[in-house]
Amino acid sequence: MNRVFVTGLGLITSIGNSVGAVLHSLRHCRTGIELFEPFQVPSIPVKMAGTVKGFTFPSTDVEDWTYPGPDRLRREQLRPMTPNALFAFCAMKQAITDAGLDDSQVSHPRTSLMTASGGSMWLTYENYKVMLERGVMAANPMGVVNGIPGSLYINLGSLFKIKGGALGFSSACASSAHAAGHAMDLIRLGRHDRVFVVGAEDCNLFSSVPFCSIRALSVQTDPERFPCAFDKKRDGFIATGGAAVLVLESERVAQARGATPYAELIGWGQSSDGFNVVAPEPHGEGLARCMKLALDDAGLAPGTIDYLNAHATGTSVGDLAEARAIATVFPEGERPRVSSTKSLTGHGLSLAGAMELAFTVLALREKFTPVSAHVTELDPDCAMIPVVTAPIDEAPTIAMSNSSGFGGSNVSLIARRV
Image (cartoon, rainbow, N blue to C red; front, side, top):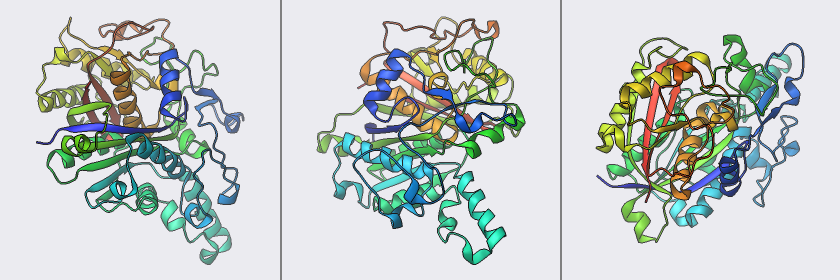
């Protein structure tokens, strides 16, 4: 099968709106989480979010939206968009430049687009509100596009004139990791030469507070202490938005144009817990199977993985299930160093898999191990895995990134330094 390389990254995140800014935040353990003004009311128990700086969406009128960068979109291009699609547009422009691609390589019959987003609940609500209060004919005609999860691939496919496949994935918080895995397979099998993998989510009240009802969100107010995956004091996750774009290319195409890759993607696995619509299987049995499948796909023994970017969101049951899964797959003495970068960024939902795969390949190329922030007292039940709680002077060569979603959907991706 064809080898697969990551040749470009684009990042719009709570910890920075460029690869350089994100790298600085990861190296220096700088959080992107802060008190979020829309949450500062008694009816909302959660108070913090991983905010995306430099973008504002004060109303549904796209003329009011502001965003950074020199690339400006016309009103007719913005009208079908969602906040997450605008994040993704900016990240994709970065990734194209980072990879050194020209227009003919982006808009090519063998270049594909795979996206993941939960859609924009905010715009869906506003569109239906107008329809119900003022009548169907008063509603935004572009509400058909910007009110569905597929709005991400629809907008990006049009804006960048994608001619290969363009589709969206929906497996909750595993969505963009699934997109990356299936993109790998398309290239391995020779169906496409290049695939843009995109994860993006809104960052607002509508994308975050619904998780309050299942008691999944942290209710703390100190971003220098929370969220804190694997820590004894953890009380839930903090939501974030933004976008991550990875350019995946076959070895032949990357070499032919002289690309300098971040890393090689060498294996992936997927599984389902078959347990519960929300909660993970308590012993991590499904995720353990997923990691084993990824190792088998890559042809690796467990002891060859030296860093694992955990899904760990900061929930009590989720972190424990993942720790148990890691301990099951990796024998004692051969367990990789583990960290959750969500403790800095917040949990990106459908964005998480792509964002954390980007962080993982960045760590491989730049030769550093990301820290699991805010751990002051490691949960004794998670102590069987080596959680990285402070900067260390060791770099990974082969790394795994885990993602899990509602319904027990799991994905593990493996990357190798080049």
